Image (cartoon, rainbow, N blue to C red):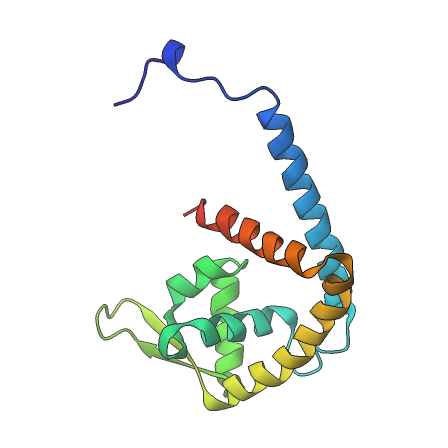
Length: 157
């Protein structure tokens, strides 16, 4: 049951400003770090977006997701993701099949070659992240950042 507008608890003073400042700081930090990461010499075999798809599939049970679910995890439009998955399939890095539980859906699965490439690029990408993010924060701060970002992401579901 919801309270009438007049009885709704007021947001703490400054909450909007604090939320906006926090978002802007997070967004600007992400842009700065992403620029450095994208400029590193780890993307010779796949683009950063292609790697994101391979990495996301590597985290999924049985290394596969419905195309719709994959789309929720990455920052690409459905048509762009479909074209990217088609390219990855052509390179033998993923396979596509009809979802046996819902024939309207498409299952995208990481192949052995895709998993091997993801691990190879992933090791170099992790070293790059360590170089750009590690020196800025100590271990406790890195754990706190991971916790806060996870909480923020889960609150959006």
